[in-house]
Amino acid sequence: MRRKEFKAEEQACIDFLAEKHDGVLTFSGADGWPKAVPLNYVWHDGAVYFHGSKQGEKMAGIAENPRAEFVVYQAHAFIPSYFSDPYLACPATVFFRSVRIRGTVSQVDNAEEKAEALAELLRSMQPEGGHAPIDASDPRYLPSLRGVAVMRLDAESMTGKFKFGQNVPGAKKEKILEGLRERALPGDADTIARIRSIDENR
Image 1 (cartoon, rainbow, N blue to C red):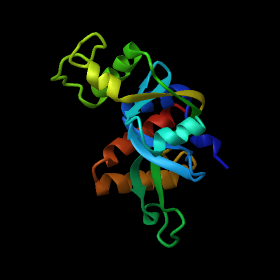
Image 2: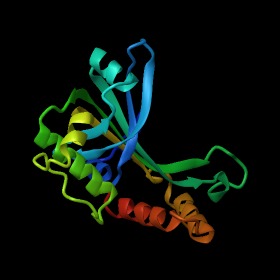
Image 3: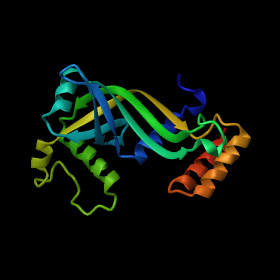
């Protein structure tokens, strides 16, 4: 059962999707087995866009059944049990953000939409530019646009789970914060800030 205190609001989910650019697409394979494929994506105009070869198990499976689920996940910090309990192992956990999108995948055939999606994808991963704009009218890009498959997952539902100790009582949470400050691993300062922000906005 998904705990309601970890449920993320829609805008927080959208902000997270816009921030990241890799996730896992799950779908039913043409051979009947479930498939999970890691891929790069961009969240654009309320949909997930991704690209790939026009052949392969992903394309074959989606052609058979276009229903799919897409998951984006980021682990922010492992929280050792001893941060809050000197004896029991049970409190050990991970603070994280995750978003799940369920919907239908379709192939983008319109050249302008393909170019726009690919431009947004590259902008999210290569914001410094350093290339000619991806334009469907640019003859230099025409062979690439014809040769690549661009897919769009239109979201039918979206759920987010952001876990940052919302269920932890105050005294134990302060011990966790103290442990994070003392440990000072990459990501710990950001985790502390997220814990504080969630507490302030509850």
